[in-house]
Length: 234
Image 1 (tube, rainbow, N blue to C red):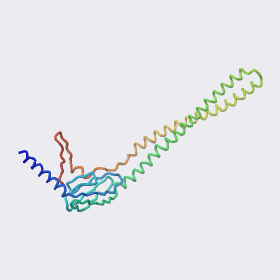
Image 2 (image 1 turned 90 degrees about the vertical axis):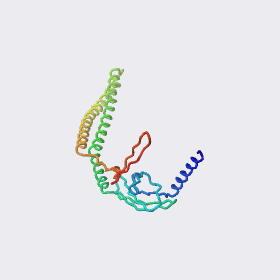
Image 3 (image 1 turned 180 degrees about the vertical axis):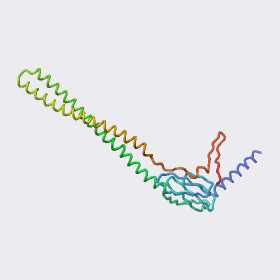
């Protein structure tokens, strides 16, 4: 009984090996720039890779990729041979429209956000610079006033008095620049918020339709006992 079972297994293995050897391989050379494609061979074999083992004979395939027109090719597979099938893909009108719309969307984005935000950042940096130098000159004024009060002679008194007045003038100019720059920063920030809200209200980011024409043809159903692939005709 054991020998009969072994013989039966050997026959099945031989049949399987023979069936495998009767096939040929096809390689689809798909020319797309996004690296993604789906292939439907003979309206029954669904692929997301570029190669497959098929029965010898004539076959047909449909190839789809987001942004491209679905291509159809006919080819012939020979036993134990590799067949290369070149698939030149043509960009769809939908993708061309999408690229134009997306370019306009990005230009509006830069106009409504990037430009006013850049002005706001530049104004805030200027405000910070005025604030730092104002603080430095304020400290110098106070330092020279203290030295003025503790000066032992007339020459030192005049010296520190002059320095205090000079730094005080600089401090007043820097303080005026600080408040002016702070006002510009506030206005720029308010403008940025306004233009961005207006942009979000009036513009929607274009989306390229990436729905596969084969998505309703197949369904993959895993279960604790395995899985199966359901093919829908029509």
